[in-house]
Structures are given as C-alpha cells and as structure tokens.
Length: 66
Image (cartoon, rainbow, N blue to C red):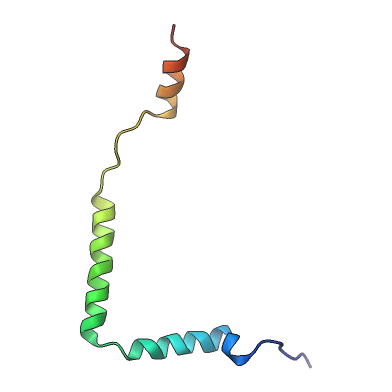
C-alpha cells in the first residue's frame, strides 16, 4: 500500500475544490464584469493591427542587392 507524502493542502483536487468554493463568494454582477473585461481584452487584441515590418525575405533581398 503506497502512502502519499503530500499534505492534503497540496493535493490538486483539494486545491481545485477550494478555488471553486472561493468563486461561490462572488456575486453574479462581479462575474459578469469579469467576463465583460475578458471579452473586451480579447476583442481589442483581435482587432489590433501589428505595425508593418519587413519580412525575412525582404531583409535578405535588401542586404544582397547590388
């Protein structure tokens, strides 16, 4: 019979359960705000356009052109 050297507090299942219980303390309004913030961040990220940079191919062509 194997004995676990871990303490109960270190058990991943217990930690997960504790985190889930902490979430129950939050109000629906807090949860909605949290989801709205995440959605807004995702939207901003997906809509952002990276600054144009020369491609690797363009860099190589410019360094080897006569």
